[in-house]
Amino acid sequence: MNILITGDSEVALHLAELLAGENHDVTLVAPDKDFLKLIESHSDLLTMVGDSTSIQVLKNADVRRTELVISAHHDGRLNLLTAILAKRLGAKKCIAKVNEPDFFSEESKQQYRDLGIDYLVSPEKIAANEIANLLTNTAAAEIFDFSEDQLSLMLVKLEKNAPVVGKTLREIAREYEQLNFRAVSIHRRAKTMIPSGDDMFQEDDLAYVITKPMGIDHLLELSGKKRFDIRNVMIVGGGAVGSQAAAALEKKFNIKLFEMNPERATELSDSLRSTLIINGDARNINLLESESVSSMDAFVAVTNNSETNILTCLLAKRFGVKKTIALVENIDFIEISQSVGIDTIINKKLATASYIIRFTMTAKVLSTKCLTSVDAEVFEFEAAEGSPVTKKPISKLNFPKQAIIGGVIRESRGYIAEGGMQIQAGDKVVVFALPEAFHGVDKMFKSRK
Figure (cartoon, rainbow, N blue to C red):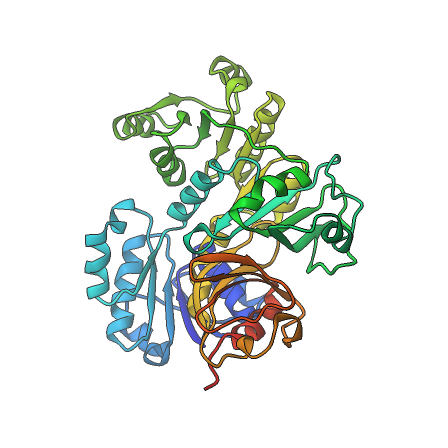
């Protein structure tokens, strides 16, 4: 696929490198010459210096032959204008990154569609929604629901006392005949593997599991986890992510939000009616104690500084907070953040890639989830009439080795995938895949009539 990405944000760079790594033809246009020189020194990306709102620059980038344009400048208005111009000049599909929540009203989205922008994406909105979802599923480090909540993907860390530790998947299947979940990945010591029946679970493994709703409690029991109720939540950082998360949660939980900037704290006091705004530095231990951090059930750190978010979450853990969530924008920090005890990591670049990657597939993709803890993706495909995945039972398919079918949703009912199951046209199929398998998986679900 020919893809044009514009902007010099971290999101633009991450998307460009990710999509180029999947063998797409990617061109990156940015106004900063030094930024592009740095990129060229360690990647094979085709780059172009220029203003993406210039018609001539877009023509020079051959926009009329571009199948997908992603505009990801820091300034959302630049992205809107770039996407509008690109569509008028012949681009097939255009996506614009924006930050302001007002852009996502149904009226606004329709207006932008009429102007030629196919989709709007907000990394901050995606991150805030993910936080809200995590706080309703307390024992999971990550969770993602598929069609009509019939299947879920959960990430659980195996505790020392977990009943499955020291057992192979085959042994677990024999011991528990009626399992309503399936392990699709094990992440151990910075390596991710698609598990086979002979692979054994170990303490501190991160396991991604596809589960039916009735299997969640059993899954948590076997992983050594327990659900707990959340009533009190402390949020650090009143930027776009923190304020949108507070707005989504304040009617359900008691929220305290720390914001260091006094003017921003005043703004938040006006817009968040049920949230207690504290103008102060959450790195101050005395201030945390005075605001009763030890009585919090969850602690969410989403400032613009990853180190601050990691530090404050560790402080919260010291005070006994059960659930900690940190926004970590430096991907290199994700592994170490998990190893020191932070429950869940949110990364806006990965979250945005999760939303956009579906538009690079030729098969019908209903939803995607780019996983924070591992270099992998979960797709929800709709099986096309005549596609290879419908030709044989799952165990007989020539399915890519670095991917696994976790579950199937048929007629609004979820099923855990088993070897003898035959996928039918129209089924919604949940697939866990490592990057090298994306292309092969895509071909399995595409019609070959």
